[in-house]
Length: 146
Image (cartoon, rainbow, N blue to C red):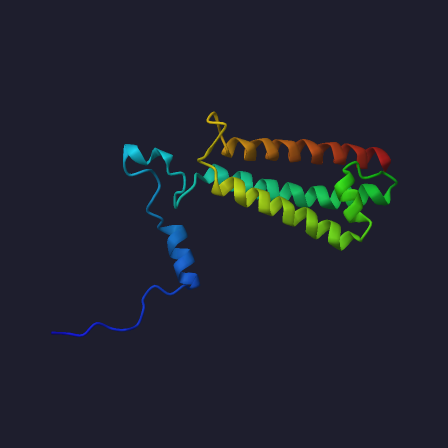
């Protein structure tokens, strides 16, 4: 009779993260009764594109906002205007942290349904579209001021 090793094999490491990301097993629900379960190991690559794209557009929005403020425009968002009064570093970090947190929550709940009708992942598409339009608007204003 052999004795069991007392070492716990379930220790966290970056290998665990990479392996779990690369070889995730739960891509769909196992049973029809599991349709209420919304958390899976794998998300569609489109969500990755939307999450990354929204974050990049948010960074572009922060940069273009600072450029437009230097050229005499005003910040229309009263909350971000109040944060801006404390400095550009706090403005940028607050804006990016709020966007990152929102994206994280929306990706985590991407399979959930809002009001039993709309998938939460659709909100990520809406925010991506909003940021794309906002960055285009800021670029038009930046070029018209130059």
